[in-house]
Amino acid sequence: MNNITKIGLTALAGSLVATSAFAGGMSVSGSAKVTYKGGTGNSAANNFSNSKGITFSGSGELDNGFTVSTSYTMTDAAFSASNVSLDMGDAGTLHFMNSTALAGIDKYDDVMPTAGEEVWDDVDKDDNGVVGVHADNAFGYVVSAMGMTVSAGYSDDAYGRDTSVVLVADELMDGLQVGYGIGTEATSETAETDHSTLWAKYTVGMATVGFQRSALDNANADEDRDAMAISLAINENMSVSYGVSSVEFEASGKSDEDSSGISASYTTGGMTISAISNKTDAVAGSAATDKEYREVSVSFAF
Image (cartoon, rainbow, N blue to C red; front, top):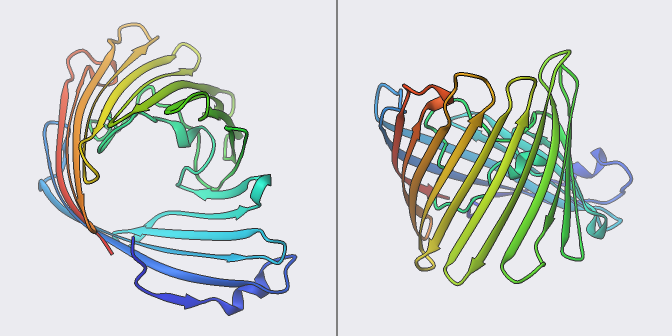
């Protein structure tokens, strides 16, 4: 997004520990989006909607060469996400995250290539089979070396500690990325869910293909999910994608939840036009519940 204003932060130095001088800047960026939503997965009374977003972001360098950055995002004048990050160079980056996934297994909940949304998104409120622990007021740490990236997350909620760690390899061969992650989420004072995910993505020419297998292990309620997708970059402005996802439930009496979807997007300057068509059969394992979701949107970045 283009910066629309800059404000000097000369007073910020006094609030940072272990530095005597801090030069930083703050920028503001915005977005506007007009959307049409349809299908049986859309419960809105009016199919048309308008959303607005604004993000404040800033960064500055400490005396020791580390860089501090922060961002705060509002959507429709309400809080959406925020983070504070400390970039320590070769020693990695430390994040403090609120409703944003910069590290840990939440960042890799679905890494399948897409020109729009994930194939299961917006069809219903339950993201069945999708990994992810609590992302509110969470710490994250990311470090990369020799083509490998370690990404870890930690949070502490009312039920206990949520932890996750992911290992990503980007340089096994040109265009190939593989990764594996595990996590533990406290779901009550006496129960927890184990999360795991494994994926591979390969890019060659205009095409990217991927496969991801995820598992949520909880007493008598396990969920296993397989996902595949392909995206094509038609040119530097336009891309299309198609993907499928299948969730198998351990609980008796539940059917497999099967999702499929196609997305397309076109970007010119600060304007993006996108279209999404997703379908899910046996939502949440209920054989009699099938839903469809369609969306066309025009968004502008400022």
